[in-house]
Image (cartoon, rainbow, N blue to C red; front, side, top):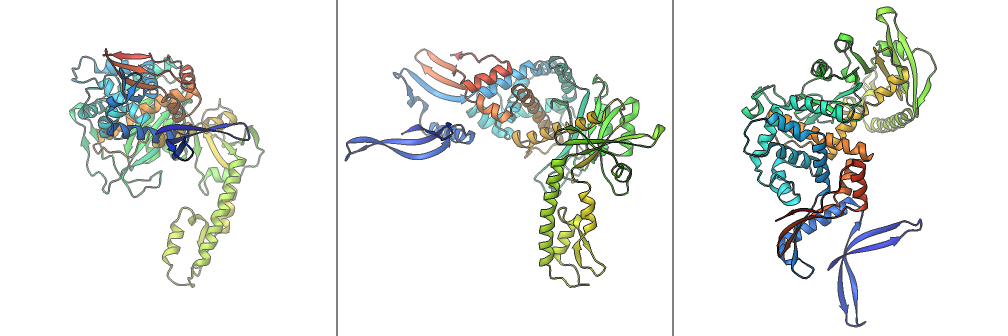
Length: 558
């Protein structure tokens, strides 16, 4: 039996390769050998196929003694092989950004009985390469799936102690890392984008009392973190925490915060501005979403000459709805699918400057979506067999409480449900529109609109944390470990963003190409050789873009 590559040429000239598990058998009738296909794995370039093959190879090695797999004349034997390129690049970026040096400076003269920096890097690399629990990271990933120098003697409690150390010195490490990055990468920090998200826990009861971290984590007091609040991913039934993140224009995380789950977005701004004060952020311009807007926050952001760009919520009867959106004027196109119109309200000290932004493509999408919702709602109303004056049915109550159908539903004087056409017309007027407000008169309308649009950098970070880095589920329950878990995810996000900006591609694609670089343990008559395979073309191109040298062919000889 062997692994077979089947190549096919398509009509458009492309060549497609499939991996198949085949067996050579002897045909006694035709007096010749023939190939029997046992299983077709799929396309050779599919990451899922490669992952299945890796798992198959691992399971085979568990049943078959590695010493029985011979290479060449039997004098050299392959003991094991691991993907190495992704971990190698993460280690190179870890050193280039100075994270190892910063941790060493913070550790100082403290006598730890294990390498703290190596433990932290192992957990960050695990989050970027194969996100899992700390227990799996120690027992399986570090022992069976990768080889990271300096982690051979690490125990599980060492990982937890390293997390406690990170949480105790998180603010110092973040500040030192920011200044290191500002010099090394010449960060553009004129704009700082800030947003929050929620992270829920699979538990029934919320935390009831404040707790203190252990001595290793600085014994800091923590409020009850896991609380019920407004969930941003539809899990209002579960306790959660709120995470705030500030990023640069290039998507690099500057600093993060962990708040109790019942924290409202607008109440976080004051602490964020206070914590960023003194970080030499040049002319820092705060960019936030509509959830950050309140009269108190606007005053706090303006205090001391502060500047901001905020998306304004549109409330019925409010200034934005009445004085801004209803103001006549022509839009001018500033970018693809983006038109702007500047509106000034008031005079003198009460002068407020707004920019109405219109996205034609988004307007069409919202119109199609609303038409679909109204069609579904009409079908639902047609199925209700409620007579006037009768107690509303359970289904009607669900429709009125629904976020999808509720805004378009009304009850007549007799209690009969119907579609609210006035609400539909009001929504139609807002299709594709949003309003941006700023107190910086040096910014043009175009700068305000495009500056706010770049807030998507934070949204991209949330997507990476929740999908690629899989920051949840969270298996920790003490507040200092929860905060440390988030910090590890942010450090992994930083390494990902640096790699993505250099290669102009997603980390998932970069990681899959780099995994072609393998580390092999070979047994020879003179000892054990740890050899790294020559990078394939895709991996070599990634290393070139990252400006990282190829790994040495011989890593170690015992």
